[in-house]
Length: 285
Image (cartoon, rainbow, N blue to C red):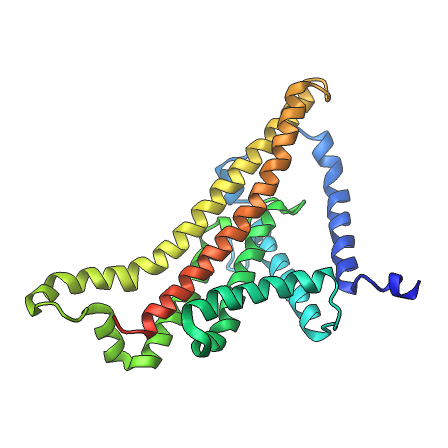
């Protein structure tokens, strides 16, 4: 009996209560107000406070803060008091962390260098994942990574990481030579190749990291928002049990599950690319 009562950790109940509170606060507007049609305005929400100042705080800023706090709470709760026989929450976090460590860090960087970078690679995955998952939480309903500031911040962190890794491994001159001057080419070819390598290795990498994550999360939000809008509009204009409402309601569930899949997939791709860039920086051509 005692064992059953303590089977769930404290953070589980805290998160569950917070989720129920958010659902309760948003349920009445959801059923009484006209359904919100998603659009470009979703990505430029009105300020909650501090409008027009450096400290302007809006719904997207709130999403970043909430998801950052949540991921810290979950990871710290698992790391501080790990159980010999893990519960489902600890098991899920450990399984994801071990997968990223073994199949990304160690696989791509090797056993020695992979162990050194495993913590950073894990940070990249969980941080991007948390920001992506904000899009399915009631009351937030938009991924924190669906505006350019968040993907750009992650891309800059990754950029600093792989540039720093390359400089540490080869020195500044050696790193630039390995990135800009592939060996084995006739010297006149470097006039053409070096600018291309500069753009490819030092400019395009952080840009593609930013745009890939941003575009996927923007399209995911609009697709999910249109599905919810269509369901709400049909349920308001027709019988709640109409075939169209049932079909769009089913599509809403499917699209929510798809959004979760995309959130994990994009976090994984971002982590893979970051690790590959680190590998390319520390290893000569």
